[in-house]
Amino acid sequence: MRIDILTILPKLLEGPFADSIMKRAVEKSHAEIHIHDIREYTTDKHNKVDDYAFGGGAGMVMTIQPIADLIDKLQQERAYDEVIYLTPDGEQLNQSICNQLSLKGNLMMLCGHYKGVDQRVRDMYITREISIGDYVLSGGELAAAVLTDAIIRLVPGVLNDETSALSDSFQDHLLAPPVYTRPADYKGNKVPDILTGGNLKAIDQWRHEQSVERTKQRRPDLLSGEE
Image 1 (cartoon, rainbow, N blue to C red):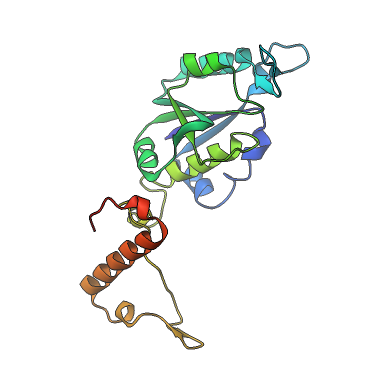
Image 2: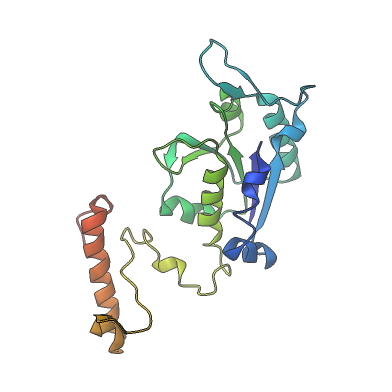
């Protein structure tokens, strides 16, 4: 999988991919992450990538020229399955979307800033608009990092345990059950006996019941009425 991220603040994206699972995914060639500085494509003599909005109003708008030129360049080099714009008014990210995108080959992500991008960018190039929640960030970089992490961890070979991602919260519309590790007794706080009894079928049933109960308590909106 290849992900190209377009931003005016490339340094914001250096940290999220420099360690842990994302770093290993790149090192093992399970994924490619390429960060592109939109400023390098502006034709403005002052190196500007924003301007005032037509019609007035507070805030600046990212101009179409450098974004369009960068997208055109990348699309001439390869085909993209999706060109994604990270924006508060996009469809809200969930595990199902991550699962879908993890099956793609090439993805492009555009990070907005200021008051957003010229609408013509969205009309001409964007195939999908995604929000990571009902709140506003200073820019789309952190949202792009979240989306990239959520996608790449699902790519086969990225996680050491191939079944790990399948047991995450939201994969089956349930929250994950509680988990425990050693010691079995810490200052009188004991691990549930069923987890140390060795009956795998009973453990699976217990975990499912715990997932359903936790989902009822914390995220009842995820339940469709069937347990």
